[in-house]
Structures are given as structure tokens and as C-alpha cells.
Length: 138
Ligand SMILES: CC(C)(COP(=O)(O)OP(=O)(O)OC[C@H]1O[C@@H](n2cnc3c(N)ncnc32)[C@H](O)[C@@H]1OP(=O)(O)O)[C@@H](O)C(=O)NCCC(=O)NCCS
Image (cartoon, rainbow, N blue to C red; front, side, top):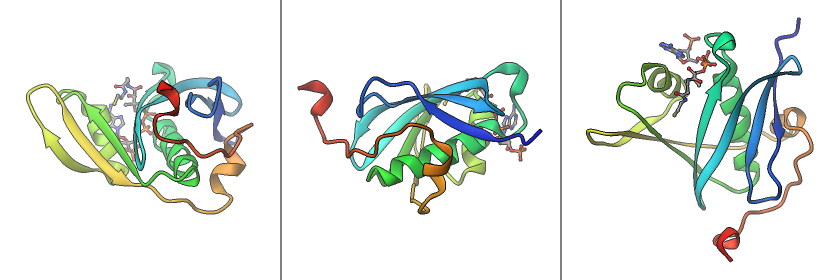
């Protein structure tokens, strides 16, 4: 078993950034990009309970960051519930820094950058089109 993580885009257009996460070609979870405000974007991620704890989210987010950097984005921002230990540890392991914190959420951010060829090799069927501010709201 190669244990390969890939992203399968399932959105309906360049500004609908949703992905299934696949592990060895099997469904393993999903990522939805939201709050797109170039040069920043945010996202939610979930990994199937049976497949957690084996680096799926870590590898999937690295692919997402490569893909978003390739699309011209510079910063990933994520809001995590203060009691979500798994997500806090995941984002700490990925090098995120604390931006803000209140009783309801912890906001974390990090820069993203592109390594030529990396995302393109692991994200299937993605059309490299720039996302323009405001296009999804007419
Ligand atoms: C958070 C979530 C996406 C992590 O997915 P995952 O595939 O299990 O995470 P990974 O295996 O890639 O973990 C990467 C790192 O995160 C940390 N981590 C992940 N789960 C952890 C846990 N339950 N407890 C402590 N640390 C954890 C570890 O540092 C881990 O690195 P290591 O394997 O070297 O120890 C998953 O638990 C999930 O889907 N949770 C429900 C939805 C959710 O809360 N999403 C996040 C919203 S922001």
C-alpha cells in the first residue's frame, strides 16, 4: 500500500473550492475553502474517523496550501474551537501562529507558498484559473 494522499476537486467552478481527500484512491474526508479574501483564504477540514491519526490531514493541507499558493494566495487563516485539541495540534504541527483568541474561537494563520509541480502532481483535474475578488458575489 502506497498510503498516498490526493485531493479531488468537487467544486462547480473556479470559485467553488471543495475537495474530497483520498487515501490510496479511497474517500478519506473533505476540505471546503471559504472566506476567500485574496491574499487570504480560510477552510474547514474533516477526516473520516477511522482514518485519523495517520497524517491524512497534515498531508492534505500541505497539498491545499500548494494549490492555493499556485492560485496566487499568500495566507491561510483558520478558526478553531478552543477545545478542539486535535485541530489545534494539527495546525501547530503545520507551523500556524496565533492571531487572535476569544472565548469562542482561536484564530491561527500561516503563509503558504508554492513548490513548482508539487500540487499539480497530486490534485486532479484542477483548472489553474486566478480567483478574482468579488466574483462569487456578482
Ligand atoms: C482535526 C482532524 C482533521 C485531524 O485529522 P488527522 O488526519 O487525524 O490528523 P493528522 O493525522 O494529519 O495529524 C497531524 C498532527 O496533528 C496532531 N493531531 C492530530 N490529531 C490529534 C489528536 N487527536 N490529539 C493530539 N494531536 C493530534 C498531531 O500533532 C499530528 O502529528 P503526529 O502524527 O506527528 O503526531 C480530524 O481529527 C478531524 O476530522 N476532526 C473533526 C473535524 C474537525 O475538528 N476539523 C477541524 C476544524 S478546524
